[in-house]
Length: 239
Image 1 (cartoon, one colour):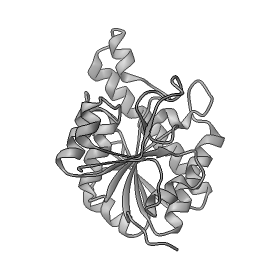
Image 2 (cartoon, helix red, strand yellow):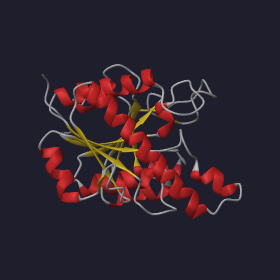
Image 3 (cartoon, one colour):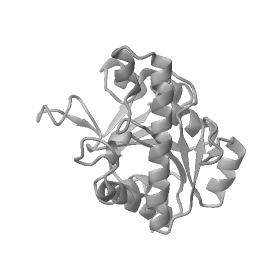
Image 4 (cartoon, helix red, strand yellow):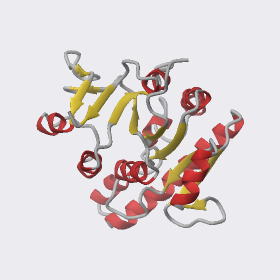
C-alpha cells in the first residue's frame, strides 16, 4: 500500500448527491455507492468526518426567496441535514461501519450534540463522525459548516464530493469545452470566479491555509486515489 497523504479528512457531501436520478429524497443505490467509497477509504486507515447538506429534502434559500422568513427556512434546512445524516448512518451500519452523528442543534432523543473533544476521540477510535445541522445558525451554508468543522477537528484537508471530476472553467455538463484544473490556488479561484464553494467557506479555508480537494464521489476508487496522493480531482492550495 502506498503512503497515505491525508490521514484525517473532512468530507463534504451535498444533499443533492444522495438523490441519484430521483427528484428528491434519498436513493438507496446512490447512498450505498457513496458508502462503499467511504468504506474503502476507512479500510486504508483514514479518519473520516462528514458534513452533509439537506438540499435533497429542503432548500432553505429557495423557500426564503419565495417569501418564507429566511431564518425559519434555514432552521428547516438544518433539520433536513439531520434526516440525511441518519440515512447515511443507517447505510453505514448495514455495511458494517461504525459511525456517530453529532448535531449542531440539540435533538437528544435522536442524535448526539456536537462536542468537539468527543468528535476527535471518535475519529481517533476509527469511528466515522457525521456532522449534522450545519453550524446551528441560520444564514450559514453547510459549506461553511464543513470548513469550520474541518478546522475544529484538525483535518489535513477538506474534500468536496461532487458529480463531476473536479473544478472546471465552466459547467462541464453544459459546456463540453470546459477545462478542468488539476491544481489551482485560492487567489486564482477567486480571480477566475470558480465556483468552488460559497465565499465564507472558501475564505475560511484560505485564511487557515486548509487545502481543498474537489472530486467525483461516483468515480470508482477516486476518493482512495486522492487520499494516496495520486492525481485525482482538483486541489486548491495556497500556492
